Length: 233
Image (cartoon, rainbow, N blue to C red; front, side):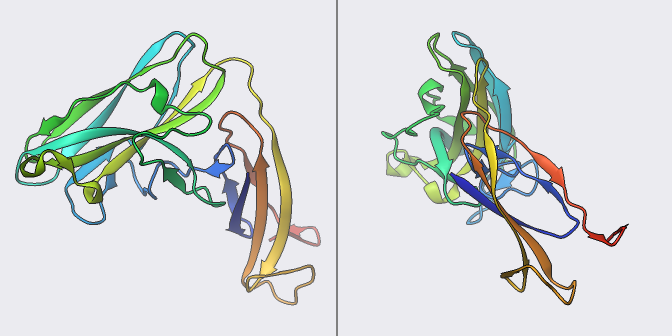
């Protein structure tokens, strides 16, 4: 899978690749250590991302805080999901069908079901997410999410998906892993067009594409310096 990223000249590149997808510190485009819904300020969750290591045959409990932002008690349903790369820019795509799993690197298979929980108005409640790794689990990375959605008691406990928030979990099972990353394209652009000779330094961008054939998340970083003669600009 390929990942394309653009950056301004002289910018420091920090890219986290997860089987070829880029995950910039969380899920659903978070900008801080908490995630809110776009449709209604109902719930927020923290952290938006947790990185853990669990050995085969062992278990781990991840704590996720869910805050009720409303003035009324809310019944919340925790939902486990796998995720895959949604596009070349690494947007996570949750697998929402409860009967489906990621074709590879499924964390949902190891996550124990969680009962609905009532969160008092304006309060935070810690939810325990138990992950049990079987003894025969292969080493490498596993990726999933725990999503929280308000239920509607008057409708038989149906879930309000439009108001759900999610916390991403990236798990590594230690052992022999494959870390293989290739730079497949590196272009200089001006005005969105590739070029090799430019008369002006205005609006220059670097466009690069990385291909990951790893079975675990990798986090490369680099620094680009542009020289004019012997001077770095």
